[in-house]
Length: 191
Image (cartoon, rainbow, N blue to C red; front, side):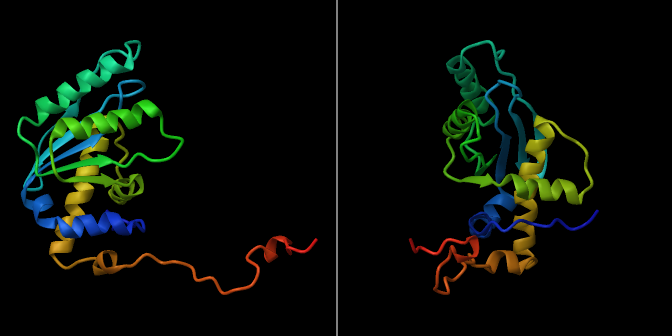
């Protein structure tokens, strides 16, 4: 097993740094979101960093209307979180390429958990952990486990004083040095 090559995700590490104790010692629910279209939501419950339960939430067939699937998703999330968890972690879904129903499923999941602390985990972060362990496991449940384990591992490492470079980094911005930024492409601005 090698060490993960963590991606450059400053805001994500700041949240882990800020809530490291809650993540490490509290109740955490990890979710690999889905709307029941091509896959189902995977979940994993952790207490004090240890897995308590994991699985896949059953949703109606993708032939059912999305509002029915989302209503059932809300109920299933409430079933696995009868009391709000200290931390709710979910895969970060962004961009125009993400399906609208998946984005809706993320919102419904967050609303159903009734938690005050939500951490969105970048896909590259939990993939880094899975790759470092040489795992070939794939699927909704194993994805949720890795999403949760990523946050827990980073929080423990922060509390142990490891990876200080991750938690102290600043966003790097390229300084503009003047001149025509398009000159290398042959654009001179002259007619």
